[in-house]
Length: 366
Image (cartoon, rainbow, N blue to C red; front, side):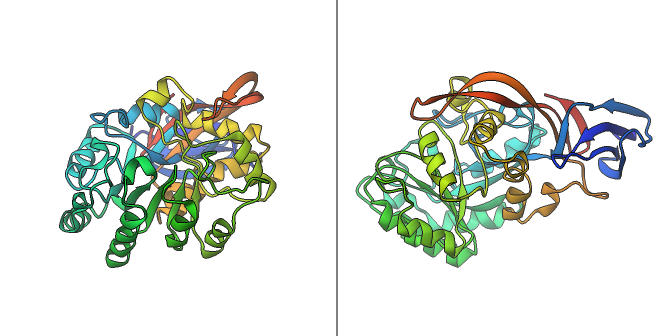
């Protein structure tokens, strides 16, 4: 779509209504509502507009079970213009994942699983021989434009009897390659008090709002000290809702203690998209709306904050000259049941609904 067209009367979350003119894939003008000129206009009255939503934790390799899905189903069809696959593949299959993106419109980046087998099985760090340093280094060199970090899952079912040793190995690989880590936390052992001190500035702590016994809050609802220390060090907090990793109760504790929001993400794959409790990024965002976060903070968590972590600030802004990646959405008054990973259902009065995207200059409805 190279013709000059206008997104008319779209509203920023700040309340200001604008026309955004797109030509030859780029934003060429941002002007007052109804002032834009193009070959044709798209009436966006009643809709909010933001830079394109970024989901920093998805599983977009469709061949994997249970952790796989088709890229467009969790991308542009959900109002998401950029996804980051969170370690579906290690060095054995990362080439296949990245080759897959050429068949689709949604922008794709990836974390490389430090286990060469990736999520072809769910105990991928139970055998340390599956951590192949040469394969990791070769993959990073070959796919440096697509790989944004290293993924390591540290929970009992993944590491077996290896405790935090896979994370220590990942830490050394991170130092050697200057690649940050995304660290999955879950059930003990290893205890969370041994895991969190190994995270450093700009590492991502994903699933931080889970309500498993090995979580980041004490019995009185206060954040444990190693968690507070990690925040002070600049560790990045990522929701990573998933099937088992988001609790309204824990999220309310975090809000009470003014923790977050850094980035909101889904940990979405086929099963939890179709059957819940995730369904979509918009559904997860609606949960934070229910929790009382301002709309601008919620949208920042999937635009500016995510883009800045990726070191691709252009993906998180709306600026003349940039390739157009935008999301159009509405906030609709509607009674809806929202469910977390613990089966806790809350009745919400408002829901966020994506209505369209501009993906690399092309306008599509959701």
